[in-house]
Every structure is written in C-alpha cells, then in structure tokens.
Image (tube, rainbow, N blue to C red):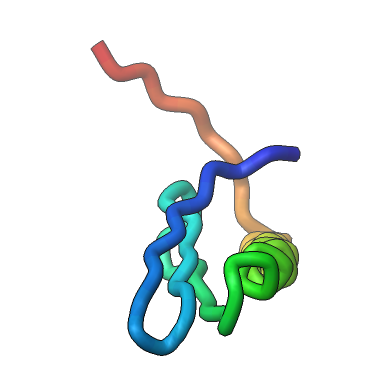
Length: 64
C-alpha cells in the first residue's frame, strides 16, 4: 500500500506525517531516517486501528 506523506525540514531535522492517518507522525535527523521512521509509524498506526476496531461492525453511508 502507498501513503502520501508530508515532509518538513526543521532546525532539528525532519518532521514527517501522513495526512490520511490523523496523528500519525514522527521525526528524523535526516530525510532518509524520517522516511524510514514514518514507515514504522504507519505500520504501528494501522496495527493499533485493527486492534481497536476488531469487534466493530461496518456500515456504508452514501453522501450526495
């Protein structure tokens, strides 16, 4: 799966986050480190969502 991420250079390194996953963000001293860290953050985020919603029922809604 592919996720769009946003990368922002700061005076401490790089802040990186995934707009599609609210609250999913991390830091890295280099761009490469930040990209590696966000991959781990996304995996952890998705695993926690699966755990929290494992007993939830699904519904679909239509927006017009």
